[in-house]
Image (cartoon, rainbow, N blue to C red; front, side, top):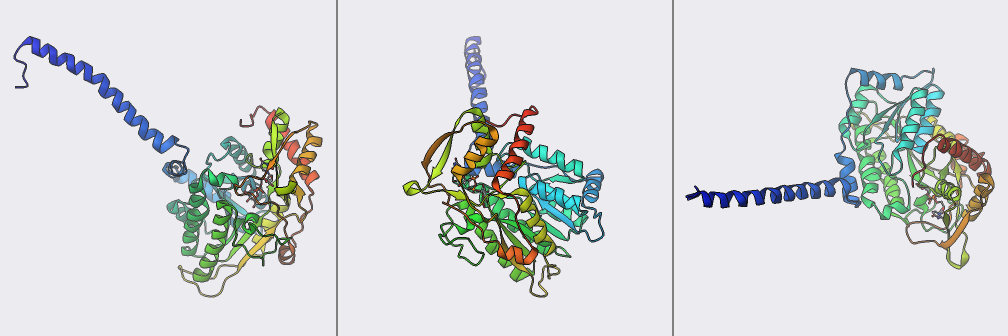
Length: 419
Ligand SMILES: O=C(O)[C@H]1O[C@H](OP(=O)(O)OP(=O)(O)OC[C@H]2O[C@@H](n3ccc(=O)[nH]c3=O)[C@H](O)[C@@H]2O)[C@H](O)[C@@H](O)[C@@H]1O
Protein backbone atom coordinates (compact mmCIF):
# COMPACT_ATOMS: atom_id res chain seq x y z
CA UNK A 1 0.00 0.00 0.00
CA UNK A 2 2.95 2.27 0.61
CA UNK A 3 4.15 1.82 -2.93
CA UNK A 4 2.77 4.63 -5.00
CA UNK A 5 0.21 3.32 -7.45
CA UNK A 6 0.53 6.29 -9.73
CA UNK A 7 3.15 8.92 -10.54
CA UNK A 8 0.75 11.50 -9.22
CA UNK A 9 0.52 9.90 -5.85
CA UNK A 10 4.28 9.36 -5.82
CA UNK A 11 4.77 13.00 -6.61
CA UNK A 12 2.45 13.92 -3.78
CA UNK A 13 4.41 11.77 -1.33
CA UNK A 14 7.73 13.28 -2.44
CA UNK A 15 6.31 16.74 -1.94
CA UNK A 16 5.36 15.82 1.64
CA UNK A 17 8.83 14.43 2.35
CA UNK A 18 10.43 17.65 1.12
CA UNK A 19 8.23 19.53 3.51
CA UNK A 20 9.12 17.27 6.46
CA UNK A 21 12.92 17.35 6.08
CA UNK A 22 13.40 21.04 6.96
CA UNK A 23 10.96 20.58 9.86
CA UNK A 24 12.94 17.59 11.12
CA UNK A 25 16.20 19.51 10.81
CA UNK A 26 14.66 22.48 12.60
CA UNK A 27 13.42 20.36 15.53
CA UNK A 28 16.74 18.47 15.79
CA UNK A 29 18.69 21.73 15.95
CA UNK A 30 16.25 23.09 18.51
CA UNK A 31 16.55 19.93 20.62
CA UNK A 32 20.37 20.03 20.53
CA UNK A 33 20.24 23.73 21.35
CA UNK A 34 18.07 23.13 24.41
CA UNK A 35 20.39 20.35 25.63
CA UNK A 36 23.45 22.58 25.11
CA UNK A 37 21.78 25.49 26.86
CA UNK A 38 20.68 23.39 29.83
CA UNK A 39 24.07 21.86 30.44
CA UNK A 40 26.48 24.59 29.52
CA UNK A 41 24.84 27.96 29.46
CA UNK A 42 22.04 28.37 32.05
CA UNK A 43 23.32 30.69 34.78
CA UNK A 44 21.69 28.67 37.55
CA UNK A 45 23.59 27.01 40.35
CA UNK A 46 22.86 23.58 38.95
CA UNK A 47 24.15 24.19 35.46
CA UNK A 48 27.21 26.01 36.72
CA UNK A 49 28.06 23.03 38.88
CA UNK A 50 27.31 20.67 36.05
CA UNK A 51 29.50 22.70 33.75
CA UNK A 52 32.36 22.58 36.19
CA UNK A 53 32.04 18.88 36.87
CA UNK A 54 31.60 18.01 33.20
CA UNK A 55 34.85 19.73 32.37
CA UNK A 56 37.56 17.20 31.76
CA UNK A 57 41.23 17.75 32.31
CA UNK A 58 44.05 15.93 30.69
CA UNK A 59 46.86 14.72 32.85
CA UNK A 60 49.32 11.89 32.96
CA UNK A 61 52.23 10.80 30.84
CA UNK A 62 55.96 10.85 31.49
CA UNK A 63 56.48 14.53 30.68
CA UNK A 64 53.63 15.56 32.96
CA UNK A 65 54.92 13.36 35.81
CA UNK A 66 58.39 14.83 35.43
CA UNK A 67 56.96 18.33 35.77
CA UNK A 68 55.11 17.25 38.93
CA UNK A 69 58.23 15.68 40.43
CA UNK A 70 60.50 18.57 39.58
CA UNK A 71 58.06 21.19 40.93
CA UNK A 72 57.61 19.28 44.21
CA UNK A 73 61.36 18.66 44.69
CA UNK A 74 62.63 20.05 48.00
CA UNK A 75 65.59 22.37 47.49
CA UNK A 76 66.57 23.33 51.03
CA UNK A 77 67.87 21.23 53.93
CA UNK A 78 64.80 21.42 56.16
CA UNK A 79 62.33 21.99 53.33
CA UNK A 80 58.96 20.29 53.06
CA UNK A 81 56.90 19.20 50.08
CA UNK A 82 53.59 21.01 49.78
CA UNK A 83 50.57 20.48 47.59
CA UNK A 84 48.93 23.91 47.23
CA UNK A 85 45.30 23.76 46.09
CA UNK A 86 43.95 26.95 44.50
CA UNK A 87 47.50 27.81 43.46
CA UNK A 88 46.31 30.10 40.65
CA UNK A 89 44.14 31.99 43.12
CA UNK A 90 45.03 35.20 44.92
CA UNK A 91 46.32 33.82 48.23
CA UNK A 92 47.38 30.49 46.67
CA UNK A 93 49.72 32.10 44.14
CA UNK A 94 51.42 34.30 46.75
CA UNK A 95 51.85 31.42 49.20
CA UNK A 96 53.19 29.09 46.49
CA UNK A 97 55.85 31.60 45.47
CA UNK A 98 56.89 32.24 49.09
CA UNK A 99 57.24 28.52 49.79
CA UNK A 100 59.20 27.88 46.61
CA UNK A 101 61.54 30.81 47.23
CA UNK A 102 62.56 29.49 50.62
CA UNK A 103 63.35 26.06 49.19
CA UNK A 104 60.23 24.00 49.76
CA UNK A 105 58.91 21.67 47.10
CA UNK A 106 55.62 23.07 45.77
CA UNK A 107 53.06 21.60 43.44
CA UNK A 108 49.99 23.65 42.54
CA UNK A 109 46.51 22.41 41.74
CA UNK A 110 43.79 24.62 40.30
CA UNK A 111 40.65 24.17 38.19
CA UNK A 112 40.92 27.65 36.62
CA UNK A 113 37.16 28.14 36.88
CA UNK A 114 35.53 31.28 35.53
CA UNK A 115 34.13 32.77 38.76
CA UNK A 116 36.24 35.76 37.80
CA UNK A 117 38.38 36.61 34.79
CA UNK A 118 40.48 33.45 34.22
CA UNK A 119 43.14 35.46 32.39
CA UNK A 120 44.20 36.86 35.76
CA UNK A 121 44.67 33.28 36.96
CA UNK A 122 46.73 32.55 33.85
CA UNK A 123 48.85 35.60 34.64
CA UNK A 124 49.51 34.28 38.12
CA UNK A 125 50.28 30.87 36.63
CA UNK A 126 52.91 32.42 34.38
CA UNK A 127 54.44 34.08 37.44
CA UNK A 128 54.54 30.74 39.26
CA UNK A 129 56.09 28.99 36.29
CA UNK A 130 58.91 31.52 36.35
CA UNK A 131 59.49 30.61 40.01
CA UNK A 132 59.51 26.91 39.20
CA UNK A 133 56.02 26.01 40.38
CA UNK A 134 53.94 23.80 38.11
CA UNK A 135 50.15 23.98 38.41
CA UNK A 136 48.23 20.81 37.65
CA UNK A 137 44.88 21.65 36.07
CA UNK A 138 42.24 19.74 37.93
CA UNK A 139 39.51 19.83 40.52
CA UNK A 140 39.73 18.95 44.21
CA UNK A 141 36.65 16.80 43.63
CA UNK A 142 38.68 14.52 41.37
CA UNK A 143 39.77 11.76 43.78
CA UNK A 144 41.64 9.79 41.11
CA UNK A 145 43.78 12.82 40.27
CA UNK A 146 44.53 13.55 43.94
CA UNK A 147 45.52 9.91 44.54
CA UNK A 148 47.76 10.00 41.51
CA UNK A 149 49.50 13.12 42.78
CA UNK A 150 50.13 11.46 46.15
CA UNK A 151 51.37 8.34 44.33
CA UNK A 152 53.96 10.45 42.56
CA UNK A 153 54.91 12.69 45.52
CA UNK A 154 54.51 11.79 49.21
CA UNK A 155 53.56 15.34 50.20
CA UNK A 156 54.32 16.19 53.82
CA UNK A 157 51.85 19.11 53.78
CA UNK A 158 48.75 20.30 51.98
CA UNK A 159 48.03 24.02 51.85
CA UNK A 160 44.37 23.91 50.91
CA UNK A 161 43.35 27.30 49.51
CA UNK A 162 41.01 26.22 46.71
CA UNK A 163 37.51 27.42 47.47
CA UNK A 164 34.46 29.18 46.14
CA UNK A 165 35.04 32.60 47.66
CA UNK A 166 32.86 35.71 47.86
CA UNK A 167 30.11 36.44 50.32
CA UNK A 168 27.42 37.91 48.07
CA UNK A 169 27.77 35.50 45.11
CA UNK A 170 26.47 32.69 47.33
CA UNK A 171 22.91 33.89 46.71
CA UNK A 172 23.40 33.60 42.95
CA UNK A 173 25.16 30.26 42.86
CA UNK A 174 24.75 28.34 46.12
CA UNK A 175 25.68 25.03 44.49
CA UNK A 176 29.21 26.15 43.70
CA UNK A 177 29.87 26.72 47.44
CA UNK A 178 28.68 23.24 48.33
CA UNK A 179 30.67 21.78 45.44
CA UNK A 180 34.01 23.38 46.35
CA UNK A 181 33.90 24.23 50.04
CA UNK A 182 32.13 21.11 51.29
CA UNK A 183 32.23 18.28 48.73
CA UNK A 184 35.71 19.25 47.49
CA UNK A 185 37.10 19.58 51.00
CA UNK A 186 35.70 16.20 52.05
CA UNK A 187 37.13 14.59 48.91
CA UNK A 188 40.55 16.03 49.67
CA UNK A 189 40.40 14.84 53.29
CA UNK A 190 39.30 11.37 52.16
CA UNK A 191 42.41 11.10 50.03
CA UNK A 192 44.68 12.60 52.72
CA UNK A 193 43.43 10.23 55.41
CA UNK A 194 44.10 7.19 53.21
CA UNK A 195 47.63 7.96 52.05
CA UNK A 196 50.70 6.90 53.95
CA UNK A 197 52.24 9.02 55.37
CA UNK A 198 49.27 11.32 55.91
CA UNK A 199 50.10 14.96 55.25
CA UNK A 200 49.46 17.80 57.70
CA UNK A 201 46.79 20.13 56.31
CA UNK A 202 46.54 23.91 56.61
CA UNK A 203 43.41 25.34 55.02
CA UNK A 204 41.51 28.58 54.47
CA UNK A 205 38.53 29.25 56.68
CA UNK A 206 37.11 32.78 56.88
CA UNK A 207 36.41 35.68 59.22
CA UNK A 208 32.83 35.40 58.00
CA UNK A 209 32.25 32.47 60.41
CA UNK A 210 31.79 35.09 63.17
CA UNK A 211 28.59 36.07 61.35
CA UNK A 212 26.26 38.25 63.37
CA UNK A 213 28.45 38.33 66.52
CA UNK A 214 28.65 41.78 68.12
CA UNK A 215 31.46 41.22 70.64
CA UNK A 216 34.75 42.64 69.28
CA UNK A 217 37.50 41.90 68.57
CA UNK A 218 36.60 38.43 67.34
CA UNK A 219 38.39 35.70 69.25
CA UNK A 220 38.72 32.05 68.24
CA UNK A 221 36.91 31.22 71.49
CA UNK A 222 33.78 33.13 70.42
CA UNK A 223 30.68 31.38 69.12
CA UNK A 224 30.47 30.84 65.36
CA UNK A 225 26.96 29.56 64.98
CA UNK A 226 25.25 32.57 63.38
CA UNK A 227 26.58 32.76 59.80
CA UNK A 228 25.09 35.57 57.69
CA UNK A 229 25.79 33.95 54.32
CA UNK A 230 25.88 30.49 52.78
CA UNK A 231 29.57 31.14 52.10
CA UNK A 232 30.16 31.58 55.85
CA UNK A 233 28.05 28.50 56.57
CA UNK A 234 30.18 26.36 54.22
CA UNK A 235 33.39 27.61 55.87
CA UNK A 236 31.93 26.87 59.29
CA UNK A 237 30.94 23.43 57.98
CA UNK A 238 34.57 23.01 56.90
CA UNK A 239 35.73 23.65 60.46
CA UNK A 240 33.37 20.97 61.78
CA UNK A 241 34.41 18.56 59.02
CA UNK A 242 38.05 19.21 59.98
CA UNK A 243 37.19 18.27 63.56
CA UNK A 244 35.71 14.97 62.37
CA UNK A 245 38.71 13.96 60.24
CA UNK A 246 41.06 14.91 63.03
CA UNK A 247 39.03 12.91 65.54
CA UNK A 248 38.54 9.76 63.47
CA UNK A 249 41.65 9.58 61.30
CA UNK A 250 44.31 11.55 63.19
CA UNK A 251 44.76 14.16 60.47
CA UNK A 252 46.64 17.26 61.62
CA UNK A 253 44.42 20.18 60.62
CA UNK A 254 44.89 23.94 60.94
CA UNK A 255 42.14 26.33 59.77
CA UNK A 256 43.01 29.96 59.07
CA UNK A 257 40.28 32.59 59.36
CA UNK A 258 41.38 35.19 56.83
CA UNK A 259 40.10 38.76 57.30
CA UNK A 260 39.35 40.51 53.94
CA UNK A 261 42.69 39.90 52.27
CA UNK A 262 43.76 42.47 49.65
CA UNK A 263 46.80 43.35 47.57
CA UNK A 264 48.51 42.97 44.18
CA UNK A 265 47.11 40.14 42.01
CA UNK A 266 43.92 40.29 44.12
CA UNK A 267 40.41 39.14 43.32
CA UNK A 268 38.36 41.37 40.97
CA UNK A 269 35.13 40.49 42.80
CA UNK A 270 36.34 42.23 45.96
CA UNK A 271 35.28 45.80 46.75
CA UNK A 272 38.75 47.47 46.82
CA UNK A 273 39.46 45.96 43.38
CA UNK A 274 36.27 46.89 41.55
CA UNK A 275 36.10 50.26 43.33
CA UNK A 276 39.50 51.03 41.77
CA UNK A 277 38.27 50.01 38.33
CA UNK A 278 35.02 52.00 38.63
CA UNK A 279 36.61 55.12 40.13
CA UNK A 280 38.97 55.21 37.15
CA UNK A 281 36.05 54.82 34.77
CA UNK A 282 34.05 57.57 36.51
CA UNK A 283 31.34 55.06 37.43
CA UNK A 284 29.42 55.48 40.73
CA UNK A 285 30.46 53.06 43.44
CA UNK A 286 27.98 51.58 45.91
CA UNK A 287 29.16 52.15 49.48
CA UNK A 288 27.19 50.25 52.07
CA UNK A 289 26.12 51.69 55.40
CA UNK A 290 24.18 50.08 58.25
CA UNK A 291 20.94 51.29 59.86
CA UNK A 292 20.99 54.88 61.17
CA UNK A 293 24.01 55.69 58.96
CA UNK A 294 26.00 53.05 60.87
CA UNK A 295 29.57 52.51 59.69
CA UNK A 296 30.44 49.36 57.77
CA UNK A 297 34.07 48.43 58.39
CA UNK A 298 36.53 45.64 57.64
CA UNK A 299 39.77 44.48 59.21
CA UNK A 300 41.49 44.62 55.77
CA UNK A 301 44.62 42.46 55.84
CA UNK A 302 47.50 42.80 53.42
CA UNK A 303 48.54 39.76 51.41
CA UNK A 304 52.18 39.69 52.60
CA UNK A 305 51.02 39.53 56.22
CA UNK A 306 48.65 36.70 55.32
CA UNK A 307 51.45 34.83 53.55
CA UNK A 308 53.61 35.08 56.69
CA UNK A 309 50.69 33.76 58.71
CA UNK A 310 50.21 30.83 56.31
CA UNK A 311 53.89 29.89 56.49
CA UNK A 312 53.90 30.23 60.28
CA UNK A 313 50.91 27.90 60.53
CA UNK A 314 52.54 25.42 58.15
CA UNK A 315 55.84 25.46 60.04
CA UNK A 316 54.18 24.78 63.38
CA UNK A 317 51.84 22.11 62.02
CA UNK A 318 52.55 18.78 63.65
CA UNK A 319 52.54 15.49 61.79
CA UNK A 320 49.28 13.62 61.31
CA UNK A 321 49.10 10.51 63.44
CA UNK A 322 47.08 8.14 61.29
CA UNK A 323 48.31 5.36 59.13
CA UNK A 324 46.49 3.25 56.56
CA UNK A 325 43.31 5.22 57.22
CA UNK A 326 43.46 4.54 60.99
CA UNK A 327 44.27 6.93 63.80
CA UNK A 328 47.12 5.86 66.04
CA UNK A 329 47.01 8.77 68.52
CA UNK A 330 45.61 12.27 69.07
CA UNK A 331 46.53 14.79 66.37
CA UNK A 332 46.78 18.56 66.26
CA UNK A 333 43.59 20.55 65.52
CA UNK A 334 43.82 24.34 65.39
CA UNK A 335 41.97 27.43 64.16
CA UNK A 336 43.62 30.88 63.94
CA UNK A 337 42.44 34.37 63.13
CA UNK A 338 44.68 36.06 60.58
CA UNK A 339 43.61 39.71 60.54
CA UNK A 340 45.15 43.13 60.80
CA UNK A 341 43.55 44.18 64.14
CA UNK A 342 42.54 47.64 62.92
CA UNK A 343 39.19 47.83 61.14
CA UNK A 344 38.75 50.61 58.58
CA UNK A 345 35.35 51.99 57.43
CA UNK A 346 34.64 51.31 53.75
CA UNK A 347 34.23 55.07 53.28
CA UNK A 348 37.86 55.60 54.39
CA UNK A 349 39.03 52.89 52.02
CA UNK A 350 37.47 54.91 49.20
CA UNK A 351 39.17 58.12 50.40
CA UNK A 352 42.55 56.36 50.30
CA UNK A 353 41.84 55.08 46.78
CA UNK A 354 40.82 58.59 45.63
CA UNK A 355 44.17 59.96 46.82
CA UNK A 356 46.18 57.19 45.20
CA UNK A 357 44.29 57.32 41.91
CA UNK A 358 44.01 61.11 41.95
CA UNK A 359 40.37 60.77 40.90
CA UNK A 360 37.29 61.75 42.89
CA UNK A 361 34.92 58.84 43.44
CA UNK A 362 31.20 59.08 42.74
CA UNK A 363 29.95 57.73 46.06
CA UNK A 364 26.58 56.09 46.02
CA UNK A 365 25.81 55.53 49.70
CA UNK A 366 23.26 52.79 50.15
CA UNK A 367 21.79 50.59 52.85
CA UNK A 368 23.75 47.36 53.46
CA UNK A 369 21.75 44.83 51.44
CA UNK A 370 20.66 41.62 53.12
CA UNK A 371 22.79 39.40 50.96
CA UNK A 372 25.34 38.03 53.39
CA UNK A 373 27.41 41.04 54.41
CA UNK A 374 28.07 41.74 58.07
CA UNK A 375 28.55 45.24 59.46
CA UNK A 376 32.13 44.92 60.68
CA UNK A 377 35.00 42.54 61.33
CA UNK A 378 37.89 42.87 63.78
CA UNK A 379 40.41 40.17 64.59
CA UNK A 380 41.99 39.29 67.88
CA UNK A 381 45.25 37.70 66.74
CA UNK A 382 46.87 36.87 70.09
CA UNK A 383 46.65 33.11 69.52
CA UNK A 384 48.51 33.25 66.17
CA UNK A 385 51.03 35.62 67.74
CA UNK A 386 51.65 33.20 70.59
CA UNK A 387 51.91 30.09 68.40
CA UNK A 388 54.01 31.39 65.52
CA UNK A 389 54.75 35.07 66.13
CA UNK A 390 52.16 36.37 63.68
CA UNK A 391 52.39 40.16 63.53
CA UNK A 392 50.86 42.09 60.64
CA UNK A 393 52.94 45.11 59.64
CA UNK A 394 51.11 46.71 56.69
CA UNK A 395 48.51 49.43 57.16
CA UNK A 396 45.77 50.00 54.59
CA UNK A 397 47.43 53.09 53.02
CA UNK A 398 50.67 51.22 52.33
CA UNK A 399 48.94 48.07 51.17
CA UNK A 400 46.60 49.90 48.81
CA UNK A 401 49.52 51.88 47.42
CA UNK A 402 51.14 48.60 46.42
CA UNK A 403 47.87 47.34 45.01
CA UNK A 404 47.23 50.48 42.94
CA UNK A 405 50.78 50.40 41.57
CA UNK A 406 50.28 46.80 40.50
CA UNK A 407 46.78 47.50 39.09
CA UNK A 408 47.87 50.41 36.93
CA UNK A 409 50.87 48.53 35.71
CA UNK A 410 48.98 45.30 34.98
CA UNK A 411 46.02 46.89 33.20
CA UNK A 412 48.07 49.40 31.27
CA UNK A 413 50.03 46.53 29.75
CA UNK A 414 47.22 45.82 27.30
CA UNK A 415 45.07 43.74 29.64
CA UNK A 416 41.46 44.77 29.96
CA UNK A 417 39.72 44.86 33.33
CA UNK A 418 36.46 42.88 32.89
CA UNK A 419 33.31 44.91 32.30
O1 LIG B 1 37.09 38.07 55.54
C1 LIG B 1 36.64 37.18 54.87
O2 LIG B 1 36.59 36.05 55.30
C2 LIG B 1 36.06 37.43 53.52
O3 LIG B 1 36.56 38.67 53.03
C3 LIG B 1 36.00 39.10 51.83
O4 LIG B 1 34.64 39.43 52.04
P1 LIG B 1 34.27 40.93 52.37
O5 LIG B 1 34.88 41.36 53.64
O6 LIG B 1 32.79 41.03 52.24
O7 LIG B 1 35.03 41.73 51.19
P2 LIG B 1 34.49 42.66 50.03
O8 LIG B 1 33.47 41.99 49.22
O9 LIG B 1 35.67 43.17 49.33
O10 LIG B 1 33.78 43.86 50.81
C4 LIG B 1 34.55 44.73 51.60
C5 LIG B 1 33.65 45.76 52.23
O11 LIG B 1 33.06 46.57 51.21
C6 LIG B 1 31.66 46.61 51.36
N1 LIG B 1 31.07 46.72 50.02
C7 LIG B 1 31.13 45.70 49.16
C8 LIG B 1 30.60 45.81 47.90
C9 LIG B 1 29.98 46.97 47.52
O12 LIG B 1 29.44 47.12 46.39
N2 LIG B 1 29.93 48.01 48.40
C10 LIG B 1 30.46 47.93 49.64
O13 LIG B 1 30.39 48.89 50.43
C11 LIG B 1 31.29 45.34 52.09
O14 LIG B 1 30.11 45.51 52.81
C12 LIG B 1 32.49 45.16 53.00
O15 LIG B 1 32.30 45.89 54.17
C13 LIG B 1 36.13 38.03 50.75
O16 LIG B 1 35.43 38.39 49.59
C14 LIG B 1 35.70 36.68 51.23
O17 LIG B 1 36.00 35.72 50.24
C15 LIG B 1 36.44 36.40 52.50
O18 LIG B 1 36.21 35.15 52.97
